[in-house]
Amino acid sequence: MIKILPSVESFLARQHGLLIGGQWQPAASAATFATLNPATGTELAHVAEGDAADVDRAVAAAQAAFPAWAAVLPAQCERLLHRYADLIETHREELAQLESLDNGKPFNVAYNVEVNVALGQLRFYAGMPTRLKGETYPVSSPGYHVYTRREPLGVCGAITPWNYSTVMAMQKIGPALACGNTLVLKPAEQTPLTALRLGELALEAGIPPGVLNVVTGFGHTAGAALARHPHLRKIGFTGSTEVGRAIVRSSAENLAHVSLELGGKSALIIFDDADLDAAAETALWAIFANSGQNCVAGSRLFVQQTVYDNFLSTLVGRAQALRVGPGMQPDTDLGPLISQAQQRRVQGYIERGLDEGARLLTGGATAPSADGYFVPPTIFEHVADTATIAREEIFGPVLAVFPFSDEDEVIARANAVPFGLAAGVWTNQLARAHRVAAQLHAGVVWVNTYDWFDPAVPFGGRGASGHGRELGMQVAELYTELKGIWIKV
Ligand code: NAI
Ligand code: MG
Image 1 (cartoon, protein in one colour):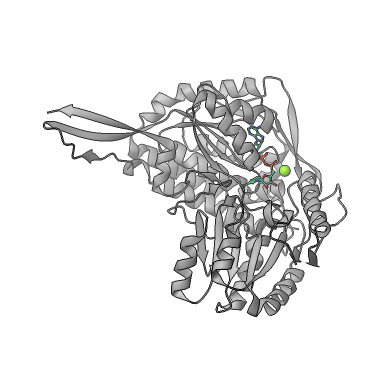
Image 2 (cartoon, rainbow, N blue to C red):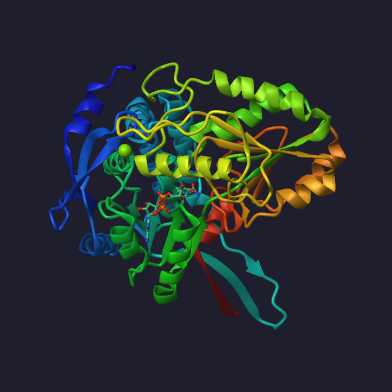
């Protein structure tokens, strides 16, 4: 096992409060809850259980901090955000250990992917304040000079999931703050720790009290109270489609801007002219990375009939070689699932797959256990397009493989789900790559690769996968308001 850093030991031993107006405070109710280590099922740390009263206080603190934060000069805002990034870089190993322990993912993934991606994002957002600009307009009435200004919205809310807690927090903290807003962050109850540490580091970086507030707590209490808060101007949500719908309903009352990054059932399509060895390695990680708890998981694999048998036997062989274990064990490929509830949910899907006539090639359900929520890499074939495991997001290491014969057929089948987050195409024919990529219903299409991100590139979904694009400069559209100004000259 990787040795736990003393700084992590002492962080875990603390009784964590809520971060409101720069102060660590207990919940108004004094309630606390435990976050578990999913590799063992044991308690990892205790945090405050915030609810509506605490959300009220946090929104008030964010409102009080807003005018001064919005007035910070762009270059100064950039300096503060870079200082924040420097601190995250300094504490990278510590954050990665916290994430690995709280979420279960392998430490090297937490370090090289999770924390590194969050850091890259923050560096990108740190460059935004001096680049947020309006435009001038050639209006057709004489004697006017017309221009727009981009102005911050005010108090924003963020509700984030547990699968990439550090990245998901930063994907909302970064643009909200860079655009001059203040924020109340409600991290997932399964993984509150890195959000608390990110709040602490923001203060240490000199970001003023009240600009970033962190309220730990449950979704139906703290999360729902935040989404419906009358003073909220925007809510950024990442999580399930069902909760996304509830967030939209709340916004009917407060009319907050809403952006939603929801689930997926992404198709990865392998044509017979592709580099099949590289495609198999990509298909393997497209589904099994983060134990399948990935919004862009390539959970439906379409393989052209002509190469189907060989491709599948390579894939199954590689899946069987993956090592399942605790995230803090150095040779682990797949950590546990986040919770016993998620383990049960995924096992339910595996049983459903068998009931509906699919053929299990490897993996399968294991007995639910209270001491570590592991599920082995699981692959099904002979899955009907209408089967539950072909249509619903499983969010676990479960792959459904389908043979196909031609391009039009596979495009139609790939598009036949309500989700529209991501898709992948493997082919060495240039024209086909462009043709297929253009026709797939998805917010992102990867060709001869999968699951790549960059802070400069917009990301988001369609349909049941949500709406709005995070990342990229156009994220400013989610976190600012345009004002048109008419000057009679
Ligand atoms: P969830 O959608 O319930 O949780 C995500 C966040 O929303 C958490 O912070 C939670 O506390 C909060 N939340 C829950 N109910 C809320 C409410 N009524 N109002 C406001 N906030 C609320 O997701 P859950 O239950 O953890 O996972 C269930 C399934 O959702 C997964 O199996 C997966 O299919 C999907 N999911 C998708 C994610 C993605 O990256 N797109 C991330 C997490 C879950
Ligand atoms: Mg946990």
